[in-house]
Image (cartoon, rainbow, N blue to C red):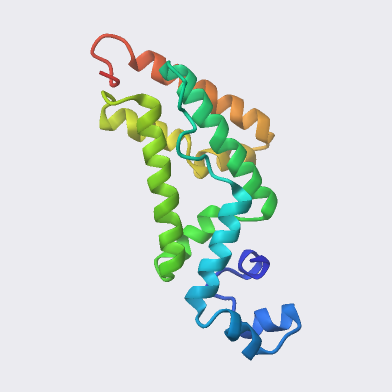
Length: 178
């Protein structure tokens, strides 16, 4: 996993892994018969360490603002864990087109994200409303704020404020949430 973070998934070889682990190349292949098996195992490890917001996160929260705030906070926390691991989601996304297990990881991440966004906004939300909340809860938005010098907490507050203010404004008569 650390080599994938340092060199990228596609630039990490089995020989690199064997050297880092101080084992023979055959030992790596015994545990991971293919590169895809190895990438899949690393992806599962990252998933477990990052702890993406779980299904059911919003259960019991009645109002849209409560659900949106909870969703933003949960994703910001996951992105903080991701960053502390050294994972650059944008760099890994760029490699996903050439790595089926990495593409599958992002598909699972994106499907869960989309499902939670729809749950936060409710059944009557328009596609536009869903798209805006997805954008405000993506790694790219959080990373842009932290890269600009905001702390993780400041980025979370800013995104929570943007998301809850925007959804409140859209909840009026004829808004995007109707």
